[in-house]
Structure formats: structure tokens, C-alpha cells
Image 1: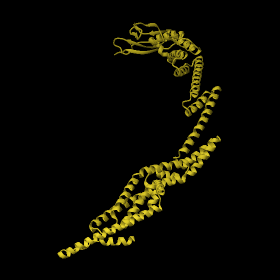
Image 2: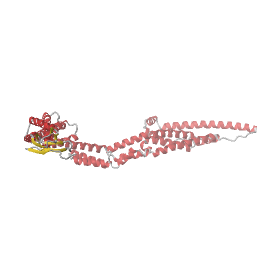
Image 3: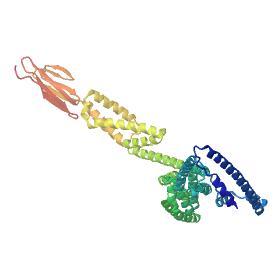
Image 4: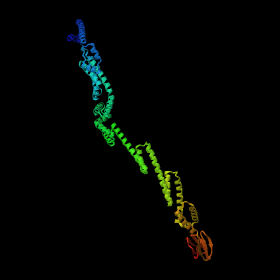
Amino acid sequence: MKNESTQPIAEAITPLVTPKKDNGAGRENFKRRNRIIVLALIGAFIFLIIGGGWLLYFLSKKPLQEQDAANKASPTEILAVEKTIEPTPEPTPQLDPAPLKIEKTNAEKKLAEYLEIKGELDKKAASEWDKTSYLKMTELGRQADAYLMEKQYKPASERYNQARGLAEELNGRADAALQRLIREGNQALDDGNGSLARRNFSVALKIAPADAGAQQGLKRAETIEAVMQLIASGRQHETNNAWSLARSDYSKALEIDSTSHKARQGLDRINGLIKAEQFQQLLSDGLAAFHRNEYKLARTRLLKAKSLNPDSREVSDALLQVDETIRLTAIDKLRRTAQVAEQTEKWQSALKSYLAALDIDKNLKFAVRGKERALEQIQINRRIAFFLAKPQALASDSQLKNARLLLAEAKEITPRGTVLTNRIKKLEQLVDVAQTPVKIAIESDNLTRVAVYKVGKLGRFSVHELDLRPGTYTIVGTRDGYQDVRQKLEVKPGLQSLRITVKCRVKI
């Protein structure tokens, strides 16, 4: 019945070609149009009657209670219903082809825009990270396609616009989805769920193929099961106090996955336990060595313990005690060494020991006094050694005076050991000899004037005797008309007497 009523209407709204001129024909056409309008109104009335009857029939089949239940359906169920309900194409009236073409072009443009952004979403696997929005978008696109097939371009454009808008919103959430997928993937890695981690990172890489975090996560996901097994094994060994085995398992896990936080934490924890054990052992060894008076060994062990735990007060106190003991021991050893050196009159060695003690503690009184004593002894011995090595220097009045002063000073010094006493005696002997004069007899001819440097002019004589201390003297003879004579006289210590002749014999 519906088909019979709608067919005449379709025929009635088909545009006809109107003649340009002929007044009689125009009146006939006017009457014809009036008849068509009347028929159209009649057809519309019939359509309303049929539609009302259909509506009553529909309500009789679907009571209000079912409608209320439908209103309470979930969005997913509503979406499913929307998918099953095909849009009912309205009868397409015969319209002006120019506006229709514009609407078609616009709909096709909207379709292209929608397909472009949908293609981007498909590349990003949007259906896998926001399935609900993706299905809603594609459902709008399907409805638009149906309108387009029925040549209902305006509703098609509207649906494409809605689909594109939803697609743009979905595309705007891609970055957030990427971060969520990476976050969930990392959580899956922490949980040891390799398959879930691989799925999340694979989808993330469809959104951003170059993302380093997703690439690394996917790589880790391939080995996470093996890593988790090693971590579990390490924990078991750790529980059993098998620390070396635990460290081996954690290390192997890090070799496979260097970014595994659990493996890193496990290795750090086990290294801490091993370090603590080593610290206690070194501390115990250091204290034991200290009580055995093995101070250097004790210090070595305690320093290693301090390197493992720099903040340990126990180690610091033990080191202070060891260092103080080592210091006192070293000082005592230097004191005893210096004392032995003094007893053997090795004053240079004694001085070295005193200086070493002062390097440890500059306020050590015994070292200060010992240093002064050693320097005094060294100086006295050095000055005496000079005269003993060069006794001829005593021929000089000034040097002889120095030697006498030195002897007086040396006799006052304390302590005065055997070595210094013997040296003083030797120097006394040299000084005595240097002070003992030797009888010198000078023969001349009563014509030559004789003079002795450092003694004086003796004049003319046949024989003249002098008492000269050991040393070197120059004797000069002069005579008018004759060449001067000059002789060098060396008076050696210990001589009893000496005779010399001075005469000018060569005429000028």
C-alpha cells in the first residue's frame, strides 16, 4: 500500500519543461499544476494515515517498559544498537542539479578528509589503544557512507564531519596513549610479564616508531623472563646467606638487562652485605694486630676498613690509638738510637735521630736539647779535626791563638767522651810544639846587614842567635855594592837547633 501511495508523489515532483510562449497552453498548464498540487496533498494525507497506523502497530509490539530498559542500556550496548540500525534513506525529491552537485562535492571532500585522518590513526593502531572511540568513529563513517550511497549528501557530510572531529580528538590523545603504553609496559617488565610488555611496547612503536623508550622496552621484554628467573635465584641465595652465588646471579641478570632496577638493587644490596662483612673482618684483624704490637699491620687493616666505611667512629678511634702508639714507639726508638750514638760519640747519627724525632713532634724537649748538644759536639770536633789535619796552620799567630781558644772551649764541653778527649790531647801537643821555640844561629861577615821578616832587622854581625817558633821565615841580607841575598827558613817543630849563613858576595 505504501509503495502505491509514494509512487505518484515521486512522479508528481519531477520537474517538467515549460513552453516559452502560447497563452492558451499556459492556461492549460496552470490547470494542470493545480491538479498536481491537489494530488500531492491527497497523497501526503494518505501517507500520514499510513504512518500513524504503523506507529500504533509498533507501540503495540514494544511496550513502554522495554523502552525504559533500552534507555538504561550501557553506551557499548547503545553503540551496538546504532550499528545494527541502518539509517532510513528519505525519498530523494527531484531537485535542481546544480545545488545537488555542490552538496555531492562537499560530501566527497568531507569523505577524503575523514579517510586521510583515519589512515593516520590506522597507522598508529588507534583501534588497539582506544577501541571505544575508534569504533564510534568508524560507525559514524559507516553511516555517512550509507547516506552517500543513497545520494543524501547533506547528512553524509554531517556524519563525515562528526567522524573527522572524533578522529582529530582521538589523534590528539595519541601522545598520552604513548606515555600510558610505555608506563604500563615498564610496569609489566617490573612484574616480569614479558608478553604484556611486548604488546604495550609494540603498540607504542606504532604510534611513535622512533621512540627510544619504547624501543628499549621492547628489547628488554624479549629477555625479561630470563632476567626475572636470575633475580629470583639471587634472592633465594641471598636468603640462604650464599652471598657470592647471589651476586653472581644478579650480575648475570644485569649483563642481560643493564637497566633492570631489581637486578641493580639486588646487586647493590648483596655488595653492601659483603662490604659490611669485609669491614667487620678488617676491623677485627686490625685490633688483633694492635694487641700483638704489630702496629703497621694493624694500621693497614684499619685503613682498609675505613675505606669501606669512612664514617665509622669505631675505626676512627682505633686508628687514633694505633697512630698514637706508632708515634710514641717511633719517638722512643729514635731516643734510644740517639743515646747509643752519643755514647759512641757518633754525633752526626745522634743529630739525625733528634731531627727525626722533632719531625714527629717539634716540642719534644729531649730532642731539642739533644739537637743542641749534638751540634755543639759536631762543631768542636770539626774545628779540632782541622788543626789535626793541618798542624802547619799553627805557625800563624792568629791560628795558634784560635787553637788555644778552641782547647779551652773543648775542655768545658760535656759530655766529653774518649774520642774527644784524645783529640783534645793531640791538639794540645801540637799547640805545645807550635809554641816551643827553636834556637837558630845566623852566621854573617860583619859587612852584610841582616833582617828577618816577622822578627826585625838584626844589623851586621858575625853570629847571631834567635829563638824562633816553628814556621816559615824569610831572611834578607843587603850590602852596598853587592847583590842582595834572600833565603827561606823553615823551622820545623821538634828541632833542637839550626844554623844558617847569610852573606852578600856578588859585586854589582
